[in-house]
Image (cartoon, rainbow, N blue to C red; front, side):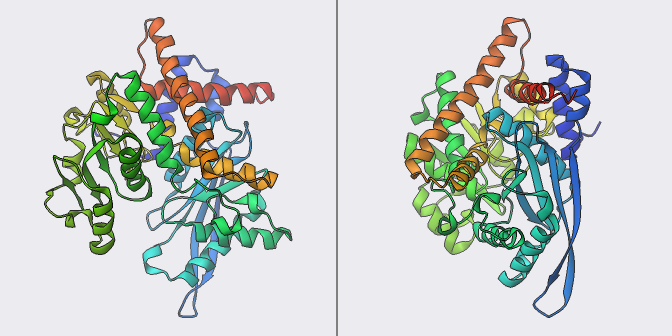
Length: 421
């Protein structure tokens, strides 16, 4: 039977499995299977040729029992409501697992940014905010950048919302440039948080992180920073890296600075001199200690999970491992740490930015990294402790199920306390 790869159905299946293990109340389970609010909007925007084109946009607010909704905005030609709903669910669990005062949301616009100039991007971005402006705000829903959106786009959105409400409202959007009160340390917070999780995991696995061989799939923002930070923080050896065009393998390790320069000049990591060219699929199956999927969803599936050799899989991307593959990896004894634990540094960094905006008191990058370390370490330990608790009851569960149990129980408790069921 073909594996189901619909992202929202995957998110529901994961919730269903956790609900069964933890004996979740049926009313809470039913409420948590679907988003609280789903908004679809039409966005008219002026194009460079003087015509007006209408774009379709989405905003899904999954659950706000623990606080304002939080989640990024994606610009992609293949954006669809099921992907946005799934990501809003995962944001709910991500914020809950990190124990920050947010619910989950996600947004997106069906558009091709590569065919648009800055003026068109600005027009679409401001039009999106005009369309959803009544539904967002620092105490309602706080968007952020995601796929193909940038700090500059967040600046336009913040400015448009401020015009709508008649005053500066910096806290309505996070991921902003520093000039308009973005946060120091926000740019690499996703990868930095992942490195803190890796540090705790290898310690638990009794693996020497300095001797670990690492493969990174994806050389975008998260993957590039993960590579650089693993070298800077732990002196680990990164032997394989890839981008959308393919990957490279160097047994003795890849020079980070040289790779960044090569990628900038040639547009692909495969131009790195002296490296063996490999496919993205081959990279996943290398005999490394740590595999970091930092690219697209559904990269490790039932079709290739049995060929994964890494001891630790660190999911820096959203949804890179399917449920069927997750079960196979767990059966093989591979530690697969889920995305909503590993990449939660991004939303935690956004939380710090929001907190600074609404208080008017700003921190240094070192302040941000120190607070991020504290939260990521607690999150990892809550997952590891939950695994141990269930093992003590004679039931072995994967790190993903343990993370779901922690996150879902917190959201359900908030709904129960508020009298929602």
